[in-house]
Image (cartoon, rainbow, N blue to C red):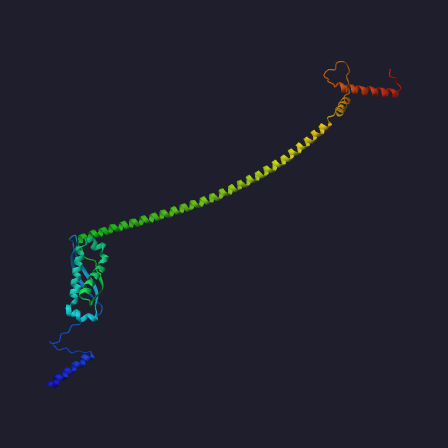
Length: 305
């Protein structure tokens, strides 16, 4: 009998140190504990919103892990079903707390995208304080189920919001097209204005060139006319000076004789109509004529009588 008991003890020691364990029926109790990542699904969580509307979260998934070095302490304090306390029950509590402080609009639409992070933070804070071996990896919350009448209203609101967004987008497209047309018109106007400005500048340059050419021609004409006028003035001035030198009694007497000699008739008498003579010149002329007649008569043999 003692040999059989010793053999059993030997086998248990052998299996214990080799990694194998023996389980005695009705004496040894065995529970498996998962220390890898696991996902707990919490289903059908009812809650009431701030406005009193009852909604239900059909499923909330909590990804968590139990650390190996905290397995003994966690099981000792909270048992093998530790996740009932810190996952399932805690999710119910946190969801009801969240819904009671928010309206249906906030829970269902406005802050729904924040529920995951809020649940994760709330679970991790208490687990870190009371069950440090439990690590919350992530929380995934599905859309809650709301009453059909309210859901229909939200669907209509979403439909209207979609129409508004479509109208806004159409308006943006129209504004963009109008802005594009405006920019094109402005660009075309600027191009035409630039072309007109270039043409105007070209015409102005042509006019300015023509004006400068006309000014040059005018200066040339004025210079030429001035030169001609100066030449005429100099010629007349010299002629006047020459005539001034010619105006002597001898020259005037010569001109008078030439004028008288050119006449075919000479009238003598006391009164000579319409004839004014210089007595001195006439006396000289008569004396010369008398001398000429006397010289001719002497030459031909005529006496003075």
